[in-house]
Each structure stands twice: as C-alpha cells, then as structure tokens.
Amino acid sequence: MEPALAAALLLWLPALLAVFGGFNLVGRGGTMWRVLTPFSVLLVAVAPLTVPDSTSTQAVELLWGVAIVGLPLLSGLGLLVFSGDVPVGRVPAWGRPTGVLLVVLSAWLIVSWTPTFVDDVTLWSRFVVVLLAATASISAVLFVLHRFYVPRRRSRSWPMSAGAIGASGLLALRGVDGSIGALVVAEVAGLFLGAGFALLLCMLVIWLFERNLPEPDALPPPSEDDLERAAAIIARRVTHGGDADA
Image (cartoon, rainbow, N blue to C red; front, side):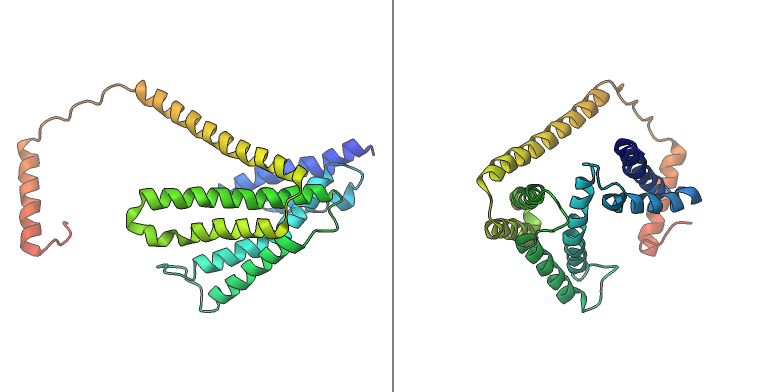
C-alpha cells in the first residue's frame, strides 16, 4: 500500500470519523458511533506505529506530548475548582492538595521535559512557548477586564493574575530561542486578531439580522378579566405570604 493511501485510511479518515463521531455522541448518537468513535480515536493515537513513514504523524506525536502534559494540568485545575465554594459536585478534602500536586507536576514537565518521541524538537519547543505566551496574555487580559467591569467580585480575580504570572514565570524558566520567539509573537498576535475579527463578524451578522426585523407589535391593553385575575392573585399573595397559586 502506498504511504499516502495508508495515511489516508489509517490516519485522516479515522480523524475525520472521530471528530464527526464526537459531535454525534454529544447529541446522543446511536450505538454505531459509540463503537466507531473510540476505535477511530485509537487508530489516530497509534498512527506513528501504523504509518511511520507519513509526515502527518508528527502531529500525532505532538498530541502524545500534549496529552502527557495536559491531562495532569486539566485534572489538577478541575480538582482545584471543585474543591472551593461550589454548591454541588464538591470534591472531598483530598481534592485541593492533589490538584496542587498535579498542577506542579504539569508545570515541571512544561519547563524541563522534551518528549523523545517527537522527531522535530523545534515543533515541541514552539508548542510550549505558544502555550505559555497565550496563557499569560489571555489571563492578563481577563484579569484587567474582570477588575474594571466586575467590581463586586474583584477579590475573585486572583486566579487570572496567578495564571498570567505563573505562565510568564514558566516561560522565563523554559527560555525562548530568538528565532522561536519572533514566530511565537506573530502566532499569538494572529490568534488575538483572528479571534477579534471572528467576534466582530459575529456581531455584524447579529446586527444585520436585528436590523431587518420588523418593529414589535404593541400589546393590547388588559381586559377586565385580566385585571380581575391579577387582583385576585395579588390578594392571595398578600393574605397567604406568597404561597404558590393553584
């Protein structure tokens, strides 16, 4: 089998089915997708073993490294979030220290670990630097917005400042190569500009839709029956202290 055909059958087609199946499972898809989606994910995960000659497997190798770094980070942040003042779904007392340990482990991996199974070391370095730079930038922006526009909960903005400071510190510890740094600045700037343009486009679509809507019809004045029913409800609420109406 030709390498291009093997990559199409063992990597790109399963990747497409995995994405499509994921959306179907979110919408409570059928039994076929419950079997096909995990199988497709498995084929994508083992693509460096099944189609090692394809250059597309570099993306899968990168995903392996992302999973090793990201799973403890997401798990730790989840434990920290649900160990706080939450009304439902609060984790036991061990959740907070475990979450801190998982976040520290992930931070250590980000700073000092380079996966040997990623052939292109520059690819991994760029991923880490973009991850930290984007985290620091977005966290700082969210912190400023929260401090200015949510005055009643300013004391709750410390996680965003911690994220900005922590990501910047990890970026300094990791170190940035000069050639990678310029590319990262361009990628992060493109990320912000692209998100801003997409948001403006969405606002434009909503504005055009609202602009073409007809004026709402005026509501008719209440009838005598409506007024009598409203008066009866008010009288019952006043008499019974707000009990539910039958």
